[in-house]
Image (tube, one colour):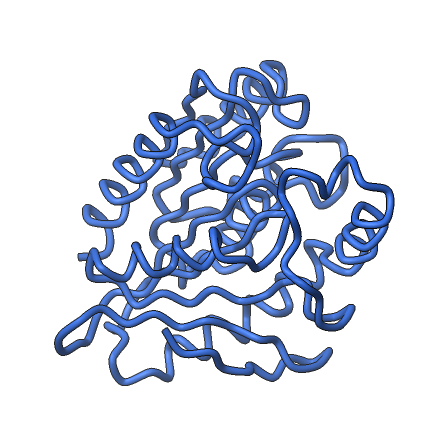
Length: 243
């Protein structure tokens, strides 16, 4: 893993790059982090993904509000001080801001000699799940495989709701929600399913028997079986569309 700084219009974004062992070029995957930010459990995902033959870029989407200590996933939502810090981070990580950044991330990947030319894959978690789907509709000619795990607010009345971008999406899409998830209830799932189907998007939406946030080992809702299923479905998506 190497840590780099990527210049965006709003500053310098710390980002983590993972290269597979051996010689490239490799297909690239852009990872949109969850709402707890960069921490060991998040970095482990980039490392593991690279072992499967992918060049991985994992940017810190909270860079606009300055550096921060890794957050404790067990207490960040219950501790008032930690929660205050987190809400400040969230405020600057809007879809518009992150899509502005994503253009730069995609340009970075395209410029790497050890990245295979052509479309890339994206995956995202929690707020990153929303960003992954939004990116598919914002950069349809550059993203060919899109994954979203326990992403929230994927089909709302907001003017920037990702489901409104469905007619622009060209990538293959895989979305996994949780049985217990107030940010992606059944009616929202149905609304998203309808939008993607009407737009002719090659997609699959599943609901896992888990709670929102199940992928990462440091969260109180971590579910080992569901996390492994996430790996199986994500790698199947990327292997079929990127390799």
